[in-house]
Image (cartoon, rainbow, N blue to C red; front, side, top):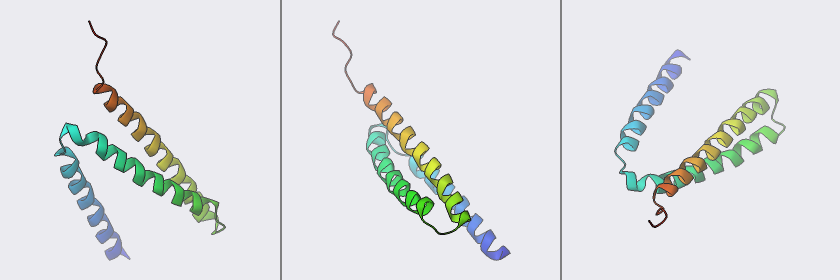
Length: 96
């Protein structure tokens, strides 16, 4: 068991590092399409977590599914707010 836990932690740490390196090198012009794709993935995970939370798989499964629903919902709403804010940056202001 400790070997699997250490290996999982190692993979998790590497994924954080690689994800940060990839996202930090994305040009500002591509952030909006990237956020749209991320919102789509979060929407899929939200549907899957609803299935797990609503299924009769046991108490632990329902509890973890509920936490996943809350987390995915926060992620989707936050992603749409950020995307909306980015799109407002590209709109032209009133003519002077």
